[in-house]
Amino acid sequence: MEPSRDWTIPGLTIGFAIVAVSGAVFLPDWLLNQMVISFSRALAVVGLMVLWRTGLVSFGHALYFGLGAYTVALLGKEFGVSDVLITLPAAALASAAVGVGLGFIIRKYREIFFAMLSLAFSMVLYGIVVKTEALGSTDGFSVLSPTLLGMSSDDAGVTLVSLFLGLCLVGWAVAVLVHRYLKSVLGSLTTAIRDNEIRVEYLGYSVAEAIHGKYVMSAALAGLGGGFLAISLGQVDPDSMINWTVSGELVFVTILSGPGSVAAPFIGSLIFELIRTYAFEWLPYAWQLIVGATLLIIIFFLPDGVWSLITRLAAGRGDKR
Amino acid sequence: METAITILIDGLVFSSYLFLVSVGLTIIFGVMKILNVAHGSLYAWGAYTSAYLIGLWSDAGLGDGGTFLMIAVAAIVVGVILGLILERGLIQFMYARDEVITVLATFATFLILEDVILLVFGVNPYFAYQPMAYLDSVEIGGIQRDVYSLTLIAVAVVVGVSLWLGLTKTKWGKLLTAVIYDRELSIAMGINVTRVFIVTFVLGAVLGALGGAYVAPTVSVAPGFGVEVIVLSFAVVVIGGMGSIPGAIIGALTVGIARAIAVHQLPEVELFVVYGVMALVLVFRPEGLFAPAKARKI
Image 1: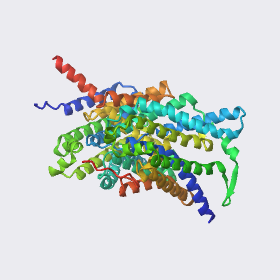
Image 2 (image 1 turned 60 degrees about the vertical axis):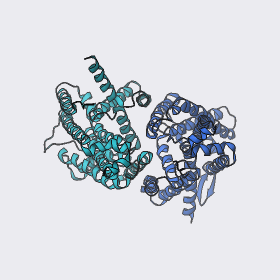
Image 3 (image 1 turned 90 degrees about the vertical axis):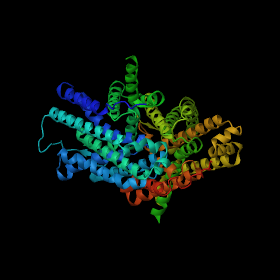
Image 4 (image 1 turned 60 degrees about the horizontal axis):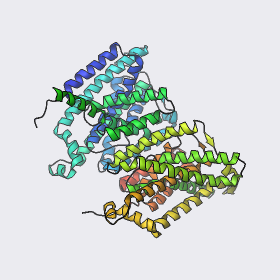
């Protein structure tokens, strides 16, 4: 079969440009808020998607998500640093550094053991934060409002739009880079490892090192996403950043999005956020019910996530032509 | 010395609690290879139902001694009904799927059941103090303790011993062991694996509900009741080795005593200790301390 041309990168560029422009020009603030939150989560989900393609599911990425969020918050609280060009890279770096360390241990594990060990690590951090008064314990603490190269705005609307545009830019860059990575030799080891580790070893690649690399990458992305979320919420607390339910949500969005494309997490994440918000607004006592039912429907009827709907639609159109 | 006794008793009470809530999880995992996140919901359902029934019983003026009967009734009713619904309605379709996907499906179920609880029982907390008041308290090591919490130890011992006897001495236990070791061969030998699975899941569900039902009188049963229990029981099961009942006992004792020491000596690390132990055990013995040996298949 002749490989069809890869439209992902032009598609991503056009897609993100349209979203960014419409966001800046006419989308209402509440929707922008939702998009900021969901794109922050999507950054983490991109990393989880790479792991999932490798056959690994982490039930503990809230560890890195929370680490990123608390890095941003602490930089503001302890050192008064609020410039996003410092805080966000610091969030990603802090998570990546911890990922490098824990990666040496976790890269030996597969399947349910990988999931459980990552859960254990994340709960250790949760336990520390909940019991540490200096880190705000269960209440958390607030995050300084963001600045960019010393610029800041008192107008909440302007801040929101700038944050949104920045997130679009970062999201686009992450999606393009991860896509190119997945197309590279190292990146194509993802599915190969899932299918047959021994053959990958015979080809001369170290499975452990490949997994380690992907793990660190996903950690850094989760840290970046957590950092963005901390800035957009203006507040960090352990239950909405580090608890295992956060990891559950991230895995949920990964499954909802599907492994098909790097664009999928952004769409899936937005769908998740909208479902949650509307469910919460209409049926405040039944929003988890709706979220859970959605997850079950995805697992049973759309095992490849919402992205498979899009490709199916596209394929259907192609047939008619 | 008095502190040591206090720590020991606190640890034993907490270990018994942990054993009760996690033994159902480990049985289900051992036989069916399913990590059931919805176990937390069974626990919460058991607690709510028991608190509700205790309230009814006590309002009817039937004497607080009978509230213990209500605890058992709640555990069995919730476990059997919800267990059957879950196994027949969801889990049976997951056997062919990936373990991790099954975990997610039970996570979804957990979310759904959490809200069904709110819809059925409302958002206000339930208090079912009657059984505790009935048993009064005693002084041990200079500290007043309610007898009810101490009976938890007895309940855990009874459950543990009867499970052990059931598994090793009865025909059903032998069938179960056969299925744990080799599902396919068991089918070939004519064991009705579907039925074994249903019974196992319902048994696990009843045990989960019993954990909640028995704990209900000691706490206020409020929304979000099942969330913490899930990871706690995961920790216990993982430490002991998934699928092993002696493992669940060792896991519960390790976590229970470790936490009791932390609570009394260094309260800042209370939660850290539980998951720290879990991470440590996983790092050095990924299968857990007492994981049943895997049969080699060629």
